[in-house]
Every structure is written in C-alpha cells, then in structure tokens.
Length: 267
Image (cartoon, rainbow, N blue to C red; front, side, top):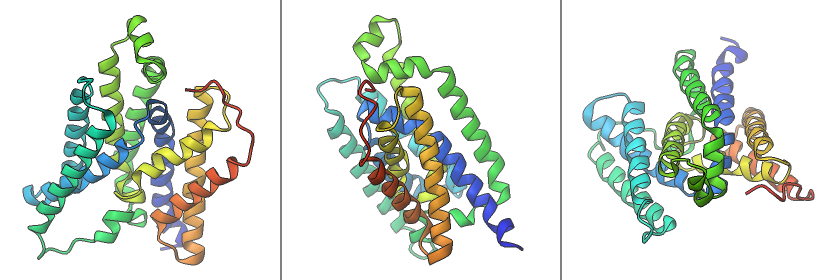
C-alpha cells in the first residue's frame, strides 16, 4: 500500500470535519459558548464507556450521550437564574466523572487511551468516509437552511425573538449540530482537543473577515489548512497528529493577531 493510499482517508476525514467546524465554531464564538465543546468532549468519554457496557459501536454511544447532553443544556439554558458557565462546568465535570467510572469497569479490556484523548486520524479507513460525508452534508445543509435565524439569535436573542424567530428552538438546533460534529471530530483530534478545532480557526477568521458569512467561510478554510499543516508536520517530524493540527491552528491564530482587525461589526 502506497503512502497516498494510506493517508488520503485521514486527510479527507480531517478536511470534512474542519469544513463543518468552521461555521459552527463561529456561531459558538458569537454566542459565547466556546466551552460547550469541552462539555461534549467529556460527555464523549461517558458515551464510549456506555458503548462498551451495551456492546454497541463506539460512535453510537458517543452520539447518543452527546445529543442527550446537548438537549439537557438546551433545557437548562431556558432557566435564566442559572449562568451558562456554571451549567457548562456542571455538565462537563459530571459527565467526565461518570465516564471515568464506567470505563473503570473495563480495566481488563484494552483501551487506547492516547488515541481517545488526542485522536487517531490515521486509523480512518475508506469504509468510514461515506457515513462521515453523509453526516457533514446533513449538518451543512441544516446550517445553510437555518443560517439567518441562527445568526440573528447569535447576535441578539431579544431582537431575534421580536423578529418572530423561535429562539429556544434555534439554540437547541445549534447545540445538537455541535454534538454531532464533536462525535465526528473525535478521531481527528481526540476528546481533549475538540474545542480547539471548533474555536481557534473561528477566532483567527474573526480578525480577517468583514461579514459573518466571510468569517464562517474563513474559519473552515483556516481549519482545513491546519489539518494539512498538522498532517505534514506529523509525517515530517513524527508528531502526534491531533496535537499537531491544533498547534498549526494556534500558529495561524498567532499570525493573524499581528494583522489589523477588520471585522469591527461582527458579533
């Protein structure tokens, strides 16, 4: 098997995840929900443990738990007396603790902890791509369909409600889309670094774009460039791939901070 045949599924998977992470990360930045990715990544550990417990594929348990956490957060955010950061810490620490407890029951089974924490993109095969492609296409389709209400809610929920938009429904839709993306991104960067792939490219793009749409597009491009650079660096210097992608994204952000900020009107 040639190096191209070995790497192209990993490259395709990384680019697909970065493509969808761009607009979703932008919406999270505008809504100040950056830590939501951390909460879901910790919930993914619980999903993996339940997958072992129920003898189902890992992605099934991870998807279900992430979706349940997203639904729970969406319901709790409707109670104004509970601060968002408080809810995120509560969900994050609780799901992480439960996940570690459940995984503790399977000490006799071989679990690749490093791949789980930091990703194992090179383990992606051509058989994984159709499902990933279908998921990314569905998420992007929903984003394009609901982009205007999602954007208006991210800018100002009160004004969006006055405009007749179902604010709570749009918030829940965003959380569910992020939950699905986190499930897809686990093999790319692992549970500890998922938030970085969502937030860092969006933060970099914010300084370069003139409109929200430009920011979403640039965030996707930045994330895809980080995947390419991380993969190249991993091959050249034998680096762990997930962290290499995140370092590449962070390096891009560091470079754009040296440029004058242009997106003064972006939320």
